[in-house]
Length: 329
Image (cartoon, rainbow, N blue to C red; front, side, top):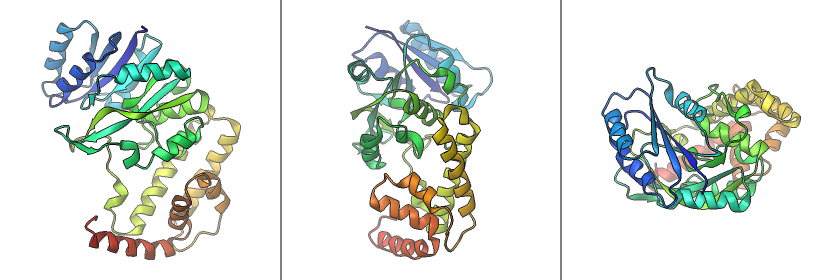
C-alpha cells in the first residue's frame, strides 16, 4: 500500500474543517499523510488543527506567517510532497469514505498519471443540490470525449482540483504555478500539464460532497446567468478567453509548436473581436479550429455571440424573456 500525500490549504476554516478532516481520517485507504498549510487564519482554525495534529500522527501542519493566497498556499503544499502520489483537498467539503481507495485503484488499473472524479453538489448542511457536478456544469460529454487528449483542459477546466489524484510528475512544468489570470488557477494549470504530457483517466462517480455555502472562493456559480443583456455575457466570454490565451502565450514553453501558433492566433482573434459590436468578418477559421469538436448547439451559440452580436442580442432578449416567464431568471 503506497503512501499518498493529501494536500489541504486552510484559511478561516473553523465552520467546516472538523467534518473534512474527519472524513479524510476515516478513509478506507489509510496509508497517507495529510499535509495542511494554514494561510494566516484569523478565527479558531489553528487551534482546531493543533488539536487534530496531537490526535493523529498522519497529520503534518504548516502555519504561514505571511498570507500567500490560495494559489501560493497550494504551491507551498506542492513543495512539501514527498511521496509518489498526491491529492488536493479543499477545507470545507466532505470526502466519501472510499474516495482515496477508488481513485488509487483507478490510477493503478489504468496506469494513469492523473485520475479525477465527479462531485456531488451539496448545501452548507450537506443536503444534495445536484447529484453530479459535471452534469450540472455540462462537462460530462467533454470529459468522455477528450479525457485522453489535451483538449480536455485547453478551452475550459474539466478537472476539479479537489477530486484529483496524481503521480509526482511534470513538476518542472507545473511549478511555479501561473498567476497570470484569475481564470487559470492551480487545478486548471495542473490539469492542462497532465493532459498535454501524461495519461489522464476519469472515475465517473462522485467521491466528494462539494459544499456550497456562499463563501466559496471557487464553486458552481454560473456567472453568465446573472446578465440581462447579451453584451455582458459576450464581454465576460471574451475576457476569459483573452486572459486564458495570454497565459498560454506567456508560458509558451510548455506547449508543443502547433499549439504555440494556435495560442497566438486565438489571442489575436479574441482581442480583435472586442470592439466588433455588430458583426465580425475576420478570422472565422480560428473560431472554427477552437470549437469544431463541440456540439452543434454549443458551436452555434458561441459563433453568434462572438461573431454575430447583432443577431445574438435579439436571440438573447427572447431567451431571457422566456426564462423569466418560467421563473428561471
